[in-house]
Length: 370
Image (cartoon, rainbow, N blue to C red; front, side, top):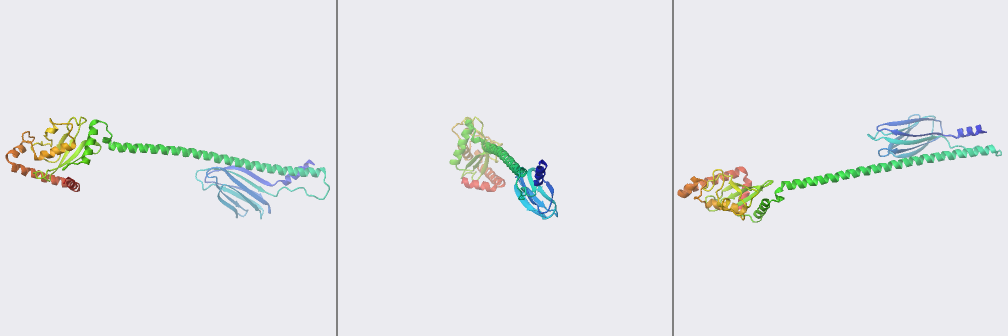
């Protein structure tokens, strides 16, 4: 009796293959199964882990004809009936992926469902009842195994998806943190560059604060015939331009100066020097100026505007009694016509120097001055 039951169970088995395998990147894995004609088959597959959870799937008959094909699929089920006997091949491809391995599960079944014992119309006996129950138990066990397998795969897939989402969240969080830090550093560098380029605006020393006020006054209420501005990144060093006073020998002249301030300004005067060639009783050969408010008569009330205005007035009102250029002082006292002639020559040289240096800019300054 036991032998009959075992034979019956063996006859009821259908061909079934279940496998979980790793599919490397740029690889294809194929499996073959020899199946008889007119057999119902089913291929079920699912990607458990890796990349975007997708693979290419193909199914071939014994003559290499393609029966089924899917691209970039996460899971799928395909049923078919064999039309000839031979080896049927199904392939899983990860050739489109360059770096990601895939973990793939598949189940391939071939054969009919288990058949209940044939009812010959004979009277049921204890043996036939036992055979029927054995087949039912076998079917139920197969169903339970299938359910367990599917649930296990789904659980593994869900866990893998959750881990992948957590990993992506972690990496995105790190990336956002890096971006925020990078933006903060960039903003600090930009602000630092901006204020370093204009560091004289942030200096807290009295002299620099005073020079900032002098600059604002020059911009808000510019005096006639003078221009001055700090050099780049250094408010302690200024470039200045004085235009010759009208109705004087210096008329239409354009004379460049440099002003150098110390940290003791405004308690001490700046050093002022002509850069343009100058012929004047109170101007030394190196361009230094002999002016009382720049020496013993200096007062902290004088600002840049007052200094340049005083120098402009000095051009037409020299002090020959305190000469810096003895020859010019002598000519001014004894031969005014020759003195004026030499001054006009200096004025013409200032035109040529201005035109050679930057004609458009100098012309614009003349327009502003006038």
